[in-house]
Image (cartoon, rainbow, N blue to C red):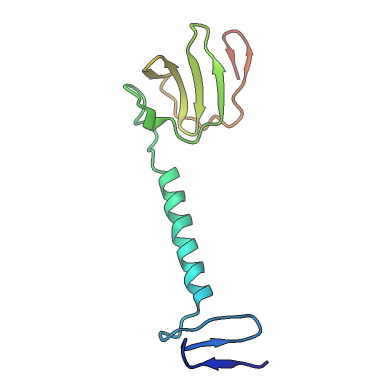
Length: 115
């Protein structure tokens, strides 16, 4: 493989264009590390709600990782999440029951029949 040294840019170029700067670390490696850090930050943020915290006085912050939506009999909206079932009615958010199940397969089979 053939490599050219550019005196002005102080970088190495190969057939795969791996660029090296004064530190010796490749640009590709830095991008991979940065991508990994961004992915970890997003994953950590998505897992930030602790089960059991939303049992009463729920807020919009509790409505993370939504799996399903359905109309409630009283005109509200059921929101099935990673941490349980909530009902949104206007600006009020209430947990439906005290369980914090991950409701991945949530559906309404009939009025009042939640699966």
